[in-house]
Length: 231
Image 1 (tube, rainbow, N blue to C red):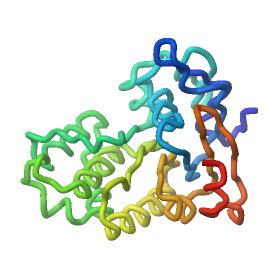
Image 2: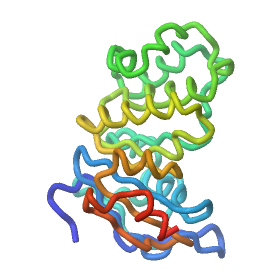
Image 3: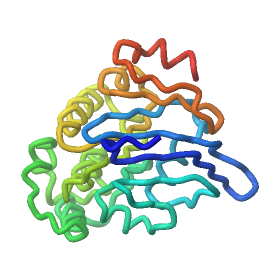
């Protein structure tokens, strides 16, 4: 059921890679300034869900609606233009371009040339402006990807495995950044780090083999051990 406060509603979503079904009747919703986490083992369908919402995969059936507009069948850049940004798992940046040039591309796409919020969240990027992105560490690349994505003040950020392979200090920094970002934008985060998830999420969906096994909406119940039993 659609709530008027929802900025994203997914209902009865089915997705397949050729003959192989990846998602089975998945339904979820996101409200403004809400942090929603999707947890599950590798292959559970979490990345497939994000790619379907953002236009990189076309569902076989089901609906994806944002503010009364269907997103199914829209190109990924059109969906991004509607304020729904996707940060993929691969931490790929434009390696031959500098940090500055990577941000300029984000600004060109969004027509937002105010980088002050990016540097507020990630002061280190200001120091690295003239470094080629290919020479950044994994944590620095993740900062750049998030910084680039928040240009244009999106209403929804979908972030796939943001802390994978990163040092604990970077993970803590990203946790704090996501908490701050949630004051202005909604987030859907796919993440294996259950303590991180439980520290920031308002709602958790547990996926297993392409199906939603549980929806945790009570902050008191969003604990690592509660999530773990569904995985």
